[in-house]
Length: 336
Ligand code: NAI
Ligand code: MG
Image 1 (spheres, rainbow, N blue to C red):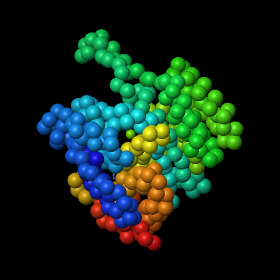
Image 2 (cartoon, rainbow, N blue to C red):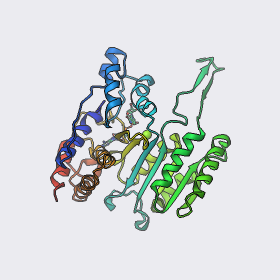
Image 3 (cartoon, rainbow, N blue to C red):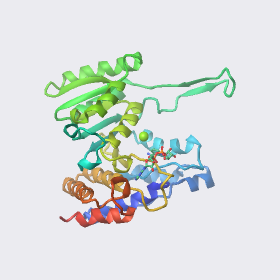
Image 4 (cartoon, rainbow, N blue to C red):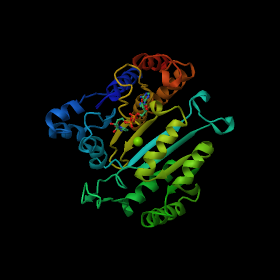
């Protein structure tokens, strides 16, 4: 599902790399985009939805279009997939592949190799709330932040299962005491069951500060939907920017997954052949790893790292290649 804008440019590069690494996958293309939404008013047609439900994995580009300010479109595509396929884990790794991509001045703090484990099916993004007396000076707007025992438990447990060294739990339990209270309780209980792992708590504001100050201290950060969304843009910028950041949306119990670059449709640069395909390519790497092909995933990551270090990349990473040349530069290195 390339969807819109930059998504249409980067997904073909990711597919090219999957084919280049020899992955024996059958692909089916779906034309879900703003054009068809504007034409039909339907985000995902029923027949397409059935096919998507049956897919082992979904490789996704990005949704959004300046002509469609309507939030129903985003909700009807990406949020529907996340919620209805119950993809409750959003994994957002950030790894520095070359020192020159770090914005940090201090060399000893540049080494970033962390993952944000973002709760993906609850929190402030469920679309509950409303606007009362809309458009008047007396207007009241509410946006509910939904946190369930089951939802918090499963995401915190996933983070502890993933970590080798330490889990840092991030919330805002000093100000948001009800939701934060539940996160605190579940985190403490689950931490007890993992005495071999270190664990720490940070309020989200302090976490933002620590991430900029010394990101090398982090391994696994687990947090809610909203904080995870925000912090993972920050962590992307610590390793080279939006063009490079991959993500996986997973349900570890059903095995379902949707894999997408963290970036959006980049309307400011889309359509000019300059968007960076690395975020999508690394997302395809996460997909093939999830499907059980660890060597292929390692090969993709290795080829990406080598292309970046050689400067064979798009201009946002200091190179001068086009989107498709940057994809070719990765494919060329797969066999090295
Ligand atoms: P964006 O991620 O599209 O762009 C932010 C900045 O990063 C822009 O300066 C853009 O040029 C740059 N950028 C993004 N992807 C890049 C790439 N592959 N290579 C090089 N530079 C890249 O976020 P923005 O501008 O806030 O949103 C644009 C549209 O995308 C909106 O309609 C928004 O709703 C949608 N969006 C969709 C997402 C998704 O489908 N998961 C995620 C974020 C935004
Ligand atoms: Mg975001």
